[in-house]
Image (cartoon, rainbow, N blue to C red):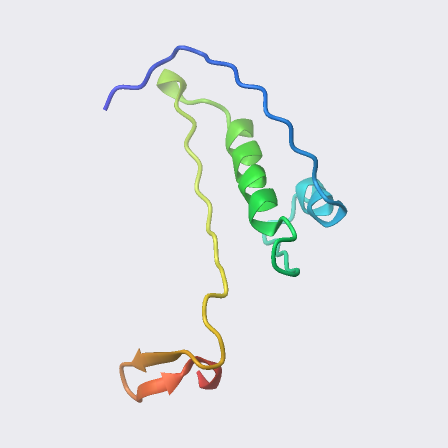
Length: 94
C-alpha cells in the first residue's frame, strides 16, 4: 500500500460542549462519557480520536500509527444473548 506524503489542509470548526471540553482536556488513560441522546457524545469522541491521532508523531513515510478502543452500550434490558454454557440469557442477567 502506498501512502502520499502530500499535505492537504482543511479548516473545520468544532466547539465542544462543557462536558466534552473536560474530556478533551483530560490525559487519563481511561475516560468515559455519558449523557442524553443527541447531546454530542459521539461527535465529541470522534473529534477526540482525530485530535489524538494527529498528535501522534509521524513515523517513517509520514504515517501516524495509533490504536483506540471504543466501547458502547448497545444492549437494553430486553435483549437476549446466546451464551456458551447457559443458552439464551437476557443481557441484564449476565
